[in-house]
Length: 288
Image 1 (spheres, one colour):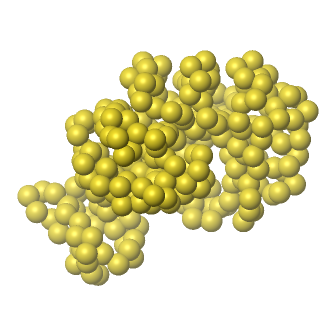
Image 2 (cartoon, rainbow, N blue to C red):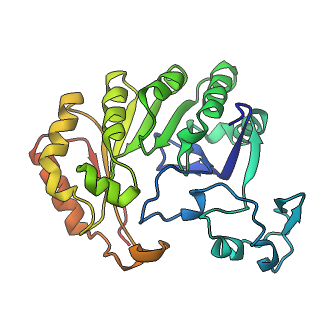
């Protein structure tokens, strides 16, 4: 990936759930997990330029030029016909942003921001861009007060984290299951690297939060409270944990039939974690 630009799915000017304070969030295209419960599966792959979606657009927002699908955002009505047509879990509705483009967007909203978060997809698949962007923010007099965070599935190797740790203020890491086979069934990957990431970021003081998504009957988190607590407490007794409740609104495929996590299930899981010593736990504010 070119260090100077990134493939961006979406830019969210204001968010209070993607790190501390009010944050501008950049969602990058592409992911190395294939989670059955993904709410945004069109962010998994990059456009293959097959052209299948072009004729399905009723607003002439897509054209096929020189074997490339070209998206004209000014014509787009967000009908999602292209996403529904795509056989590759992708979308033509992406932006190519360079560093200066992102800095310009940040400055538009600067008086209201506490920081920047890079998310996805999986943010770390475009790591060279993140490193260069965070460096630019830290070097700019008007931006250097902003905190720079990464929201990640944790699959990046230690050597990758070492490339950005100088310019990254913190990371939020998802641990989708405790048992590696359960994790592999959910995501297509084992969780050895994820656990190593959590350990390493905690050691260098850059682990902002560990996130658990409770999916009744499919994740093993509720039955692994002691193992989870023991693992995290050794790293930091005050480690921040956020529990999220699965809901099947907007998911695709088999996960549409999966039951949503109830408030009672979430609170019971949190109580178990507290019983085993974890105290800094955030629960969902709403349940769908």
